[in-house]
Length: 375
Ligand code: SF4
Ligand code: SF4
Image (cartoon, rainbow, N blue to C red; front, side, top):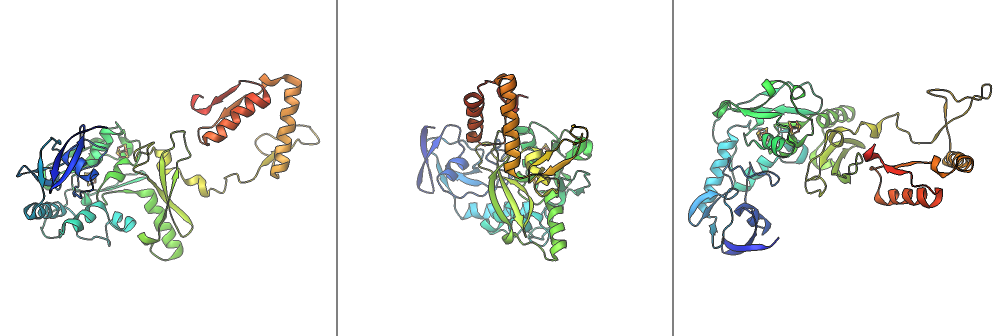
């Protein structure tokens, strides 16, 4: 991307790129500008105004101001005071119970709202307000919605529209009565929601939560009789195994148990987006039905037939591989290489798929190889 020109930010010269706002260019240059309604994956919205700066002496939101050559951007005491007051006014929509009640603060040490409040020196309880929404009694096991913690940034509505294309939720009401609702104010499962969890991960407060992870945390806490603290959660980055896209995921674990998955926001494959399987499909990891050893179904000596739907016994890898190799060799000898076909998996590495291709073409001698994406 070519630099198109430059502007000054508190005396520092910053080059900007095509389409960048003052907020984006300044943050890229290392300036710290607080915001609440901004998510770099979404179109700028400019509703919270917390990113205000002075642009050529006039106060304006930096997220909706496009860069232009020669702009003079400054942040002074008046701007600092304005940001503080804006965050305090926004905080009047929230219960004043950071850490004790905010589920996101409990999980991450702080939610985005409380981090921004601290950064601008705001006291969230300074103004008496009123929460417009209430907890929604959805039946789904994945996504909890408690709009008493909503600050009306509409990031959830916008990500559901702009990134997911689902339009499952919308804003309704005005002022303190304003809240977010799914279709006809029913449960998410009765709307077009795909339970992708995108709205949870853009929400800057604890209004939207991963209910499955919360349930798991409660289960582990009950078992170990101790609350789980944010600092004891191990967070390990990995790649989702479900399809060939390879979205970045973070495995969150504590006391030897997987609590849940969160997306890696700067994962090149997904930009923080996961599907319902990648976000919630983790039960197989600890399932007692999971195969950990090869199983062989022997023939019944009296009938010479294999049992249908069962009759497996555990075997060693050596025994299983010898059996498969012998059967394959016999088949090739008796019926030729084109009786063999291989389906590569999008869930394995490129190297493993390459080896399968070499094995199929070079060792077996057939071109019958395809990929599960096409079946
Ligand atoms: S889970 Fe996904 S589809 Fe459902 S409301 Fe949230 S963003 Fe929209
Ligand atoms: S639920 Fe969260 S993301 Fe949605 S409008 Fe409220 S605070 Fe913003």
